Length: 146
Length: 146
DNA sequence: ATAAATAAGGATAAAATTGTCCTTAATTAT
DNA sequence: ATAATTAAGGACAATTTTATCCTTATTTAT
Image: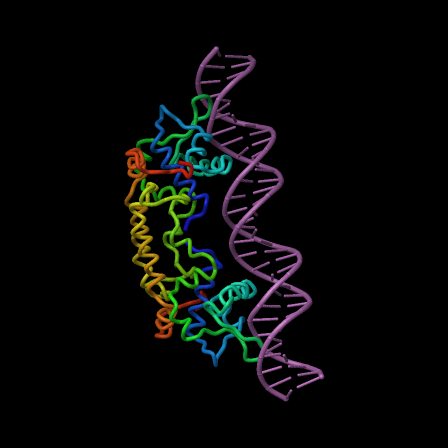
């Protein structure tokens, strides 16, 4: 559904939301290990997420790293998709038609529109915080290696 | 959600199902124009769909081209995904984790699993024929250019 | 001030996907 | 038989995505 970049972005954001605070920042190496993603590529993706402090914040130097503010935790998960420029995936036609709408529907439109609505609702209604909370309750996983 | 290849595969299959018969075959050029896809790339994709006559059938020579049998029309749309080797998209974890299940869920698993189920149901329950019928009723579109 | 630690950014490489072109094979009509 | 028409298949090219590496900038601690 999403690109690798977006998958890493979502996993990293959830992990940072769960483990970090402005006092306790996380380094790139720890994050990449935890979410099982390639280190340098993850760095690029974190750059997109920290751009304008939209979703993730960062600090240079010793004890620096990545963290998330309380305010940003309250953003819908969809904000991550927007930050990595893949929000359109939620809205696009499942057959890839440029123009597919009620007025000009593709053959799957009437069926798929309900799923699309739920997808959008999922990413819009749940906040980054929501997902981080569940992971800290214990039973959830964010990386491939145990 | 799907790759371009899969989008073209779905559009081509629906178009062929609507316009062709074993007596009335469709040429590559017509198909590519109708579904607004690159001609030569579409040829490759049609090759996958005709492999072992799984979904689409073809014939060489004058008055040759692509068509679909009555039997194949009754296949679930999911058969197209399988033919182009992209069926896994329906099942995969939305965060891209290799192992994501009830027993070892990712942070979005509990929410997303319902959507996943509906997606699978959509592609499993609807046949190629179903989609072709609706397009021939008139109000549906399968290409970008009008 | 200096050194150490860390993210930011640029250049590049590797791999995958998308796309084209040309030759070959199969079929049909003459 | 021959020519025309069409799909099949192989080789390659272009583009996009994924990934790495190296240098630079920023901050902190000494």
